[in-house]
Structures are given as C-alpha cells and as structure tokens.
Image (cartoon, rainbow, N blue to C red):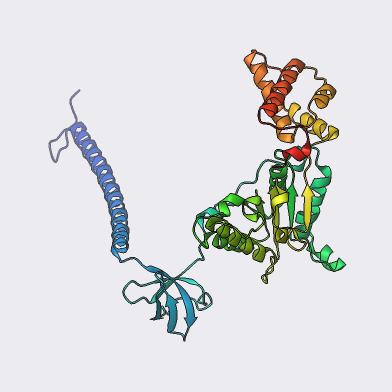
Length: 406
C-alpha cells in the first residue's frame, strides 16, 4: 500500500495534518503566553499605582513634618466672626484672625486652640486636655470582684449600694420623696478589712465609669498643681458621667489644717480646699458620686466630714465570728483541702482582718506545696495561723480593733 498524495501539491496528506496540528499548538502556546504577559502587565500597573499612592502619602507626611509647629493657646474672647483674643502658652495676649472653616459652636472663651507660629491665627480647636495621671485613673476593665466575694460586710454593702448605686440607677425615687441623693460616702476602718475591695465590687457591679485615685497622687510639689489635678479629676468624671470617683487614703490630703505649717503643708491644704469646693461648690456634681477610704478618720479635717460632702460615714470593722467564717469559707472553697475543722480556725483567728485571713489560707497552701502535697490539711492551716500571729507580734499589731487605726 502506498501513501496517499495530494494531486495539487504533491504533498502527502498525513504530513499536512501534522504540520497543521503543530501550527495550532504554537498558536495556543503563544496565546497563553500573551495572556500571561497581559496579566503580569496589569499586576505591575496596579503595583505601580499603589507605590505611587504610598510615595505621595509619604511626601505629604514629610511636608507636614517640615511645617513649623503650632502654638497651643487659649481663646479669651471672640470679637466678631473673623477676629478673637487669644492667650499664648507664654502668657502673652494677642488679637488674631480665625480660620473660617472652624465650627463656631466650639469656639467659646476658654477653649484650647492651636495658633499659627507666624501669624498666631487660630488654626484648630483642641480638646480640653487632662493630666495623664488623671486620664489614666479611669478604670477601663472592670475588676473581677463581686459583692459575694466580700465576706462579713452585708450591712456595709447595703449602705454603699443605697448611697451610690441607687441614685445612679433610680434617681426618680429621690425626686418622688423630695430629697437630694447622697453625694458620697467615706469608708473608715483598720487596714485590710475590705475598704478597697468593697470599692472594687462597686466598680464591677455598676455600669458607671469608675475613676480611682490615691490621695498621695494629688499631693504635688509645685503650687497649684494639686488643685489643678483635683479640678481635672472632677471635670473628667462629669465628662464621663454617670461616674464614681474613688479616693483611697484620703487622709494624705484631708488632714486637719494647722496654723504652723510648712510650705509643703500649705500646698496640701490648698489641694484640700479645692476638693472641698468640688464636693460642695456652686457646680452641681449631678451623676458623679464619691467614695473615699481612710484608716485614720481621727486626723481628717472637720470640713471634710460635715454633711453635704460625705453624707455617710461607713465603718468597716474587723470581722466578727460570722464574718471570719464567711471570709474563710470563700477562700477555702477555691482550694483543694481535706476535712477541715473550720470552727477551730475561727476561734484561733480572733482579731484577724480580712487580709490576714486570706494570707492565712495562702500560707497554708504554700506549706502544703512545700511538703509535696496537692491538698491542704488541718495542720497546714494551724501552722499558717501561728505564722501570721508571729508576724503580727513582730509588727506590733495587737488584737484590739482600735490599735489597727493608724
């Protein structure tokens, strides 16, 4: 059999088919390659556009960084729509022009503004700034403390909730009766009896903003700084209202005022006077409540204790027998223990504060761990009680509640 030949071209038919298939394969390959190159070109064009945008953004940032800084000042008076009186940071007063793009609602005397360094014209309205120590005092995350974890203080918890939570949650009750709700409460008692823990429980259970500050943080070195911080503290609370301010160790700034005082004492007294003005001044506190705590109520100034400022003085005493039982039960329930004679421990811990009872359970757990055991025995707690008592004697703490004040 011979190979079939095309009469016109004298080319074998089988060879022509093979050449055609080869051309088709080359065409498909070139088409796919063209598509790939087009896709790469589009991708590169997109990358180039993105890089150009980033370069433009960086150029703008560099331009802004090269601009002269703005001066921070305060607006004192508005003369008309185009002119105002401002006081710069160095205290000099100027008449300047106002940026017409600024909102006239926020332009008011006392507002913080940014001024152009050359013309001193008002460029921007700034938010009223608070001291970092004041703004950082706001508690963002609520503590994991509930009223159930505060043992032996049922009556005190009820008084706190009536004076702090009830006016914030149901103010209409006070309006119906026709009385003003309490402004604040003062927690007094020996160290370690649960004053700060009770305040943490209030912070955890309420939806109000909680701002905590230690009294010693308000005692500043320079004249006027302490009073300024007190003003900013209450300003922050009003801005975040409903809010609760917790002043721990208030005796640091609330001690009785004396005639013979040093310059440092006089500055602390100025801070106290500012606190008194904020508590019972012309500006209403509205939805702001105050909780203060101290273990030295005997040295507090009489003006601080009068009704209208701290309407309730709540004593947090050393836990009695039922209180010690509740506190020990709360801590021991979290621990792996064998059979414990709780009544015997309650008798031996007479005069212990809540903090010392917690320290006893922690010490008992450490004794068990040191012995290589996973459970706490009665003997561990007995030894822990003896160690805490020995530490109390070393520190000169007696079992009398009065001896623990101060």
